[in-house]
Image (cartoon, rainbow, N blue to C red; front, side):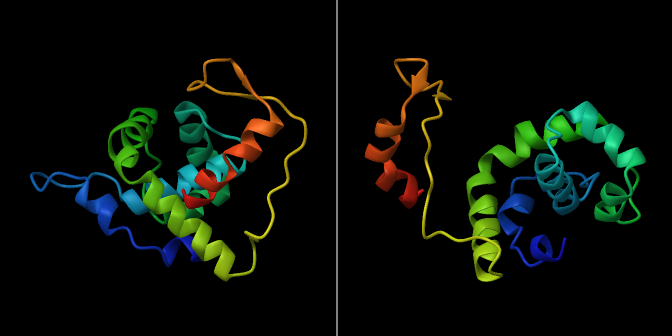
Length: 138
């Protein structure tokens, strides 16, 4: 939570319309998405359930009521897609500065990774090494 508090959310807030009010805090919704991913919770319905039961999710929400699954899905699908690269870039930077993450080495084993953008359904180790420079730039 402390790492996520130090991030700049101005681009995320800019993704919202100036008409009307923001129903849920985008910062808190992003926090529960990140914490959910860290714990293997990706479904909006599972995240909704966890926000109502798990004390860690409740802490991240502050005193706000748990969002419903439609709010989480809408946030992830409509608002977050425009700024996700910026937010996760900031998160990686924060974790690197805190010494929790090292960008020195990337370890690749012989695991096949399924890819949607490739002509074939799997990507092998050699092709990931070939494209390593473009991954580092991103």
